[in-house]
Amino acid sequence: MTKTIRVGWLDPSLNSRNTGDQIIADAVHRELRETLRDTEIVRLPTQTFLRPSERVLARSCNKFIVGGTNLLNGNIPRYIQWRLDPGSYGTYKRRVSTMGVGWWQYQSAANGVSRHIWKNVLGSGANSVRDTYTANRLAEFGVASINTSCPTVWKLPEYTSAQALAPSSVLMTITDYHKNPKRDLRLIRGLRDRYREVLVWPQGSQDRDYLTSLDSQIKFIGPELSDFDAALNGGSVDYVGTRLHAGIRALQFGVKSTILAIDNRATEISRDIGISIMSNDLNDVDWEQVDRREPGKLAIPHVAIGQWRKNLSAWVLE
Image 1 (cartoon, rainbow, N blue to C red):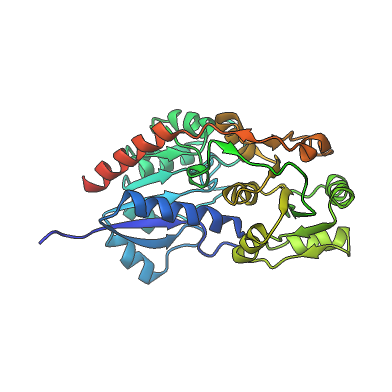
Image 2 (image 1 turned 135 degrees about the vertical axis):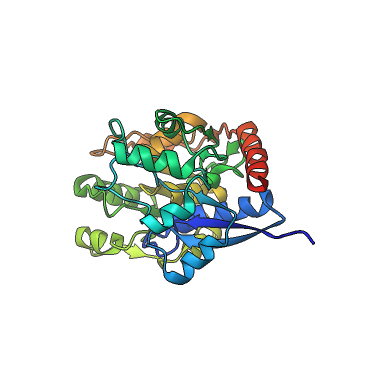
């Protein structure tokens, strides 16, 4: 009788207050099911420490895959995205593969604690990263990886579409932890000049409070991912905003997407695959880009993705 292989999916969307993590998790789950068809996949959190029942489940896993988000950084323990304690560190040691993860912000050389943790947790598994910058950071301390970009873009078409004429409605996002009242107010007012209806999706837990403090007339849709999907799928609409994965979700629905880059994530993904972003000048909005209707071309790294799939399947079976 063949023994079932159990893989622990370390999922940053569990217990997250940012709905954008669900967009990443949706893509990660789809790709894992396609790649590891004969394995049992169980979900474990990264944003909270493992509870006793989760520790038992983790110890039953053969390997682990951490999927998506800007999980890595070089300033542990001052800044921690992944809640590791000595017990879980021992369980994960050299048994974790990454899938489209990224490095948090632009940072100087990683400190000794960070280098030790990533080198020993990730080891020499089948590591996939979302951009060249992250690959270079991991290579600094001997962790090999393949740049596959983010799993959310793997199924995007070569050419992104755009309606010839601007629709009547636009979906907007703002990022609560990157407040810029001058630019954000300019964005709201400029969109009202261009669209009959401006709707805001509050992706983050504090987005609604922040935007309401700027403009009491803001119209919100519901905060769930299903609310955003329904708005994207419900008719003629554009997307404009600072939330990267909301912009990628819009592209998944064939909606014209204008992403305002506010950190390294959008900038680095754009450099690698050509996804259209607005200059990261945080004090202004490039209205010519918002108004532009031409389709864009993407360079999805299908060869690298295929190689990572093969590496992952072989590694899980070791």
